[in-house]
Length: 397
Image (cartoon, rainbow, N blue to C red; front, top):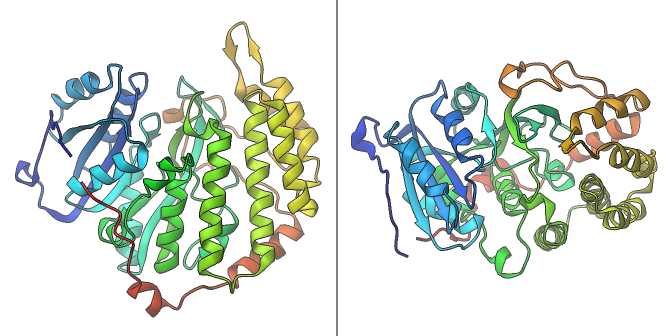
């Protein structure tokens, strides 16, 4: 594979190779509208021992030029180029060129709180070798960096969380985790074959499952990621997302037949509910209702709590008003009718003006408490087995 490293730094630029260094990896495809904001949020990190690797995945806009311009201001920025091969291949290319002890993925349209890496490094260091990944909470932001919600149902899962992660991807998005590079290499990195199977979308989820299968996971319980909901993102391609999730979960079932059937039934209900709500909020009403019905079939007890009515009302509210999407208003109006989603004092603020420590709590139903207790009791591997498993070796240049 031929590379073009336009703005390049190296360990000799003042950082000791490996120990304590975080390799920030940013795949970028036609990201000219947001890549500078993503880079600025990395440059502003209070943890300064970084290298910042941007992979231009065959963009046909000004993405590379913007990275070059910002890179002239900060020698830690490295620009690599490849033909358009997808997010998994782009991340693997960055990992293959990384020298940090840790890897922190960041999507080109997301942003970080300035203390994100500092807080995660502290947790990772305190936990030692058993910790393979440290995640944090995320807030949804619009194209103007305004907070419109939290990213899904946040949990405080720690330790051996494999079964809970099968049930739901509580890590949330690709910009949340800090991962030990050695462990990421052992599991084989990100799976580029999903793209060849028209199943892009859950590459990061597959990595989280592989890490949780072998090592423990820890958390910084603060909202340190601004996750952008701009239209056209990967999460909007519902058919690819559904196919991607089914492939990954099928592999989990094949490897772990000892896990109970109800875990996968709950997982299907949870995932299709998320997919249905996502479609409705993007105006794809028929697909949204289709997925919500599937969710109801797989997990009727959890999904019968007015999910369909709630989703339809949110969809009707979230319309364009004089050309501006006011998504934050939809959530606030929904709060009036469903106490499960309380109002938050940070919604409607600029992301960087919002206190990351303000937790948007939700009421937890007794049935959900019981279910989480069951999930916590499910273990897949002992600690000794977890640390000796080898990976599939997908990372290649």
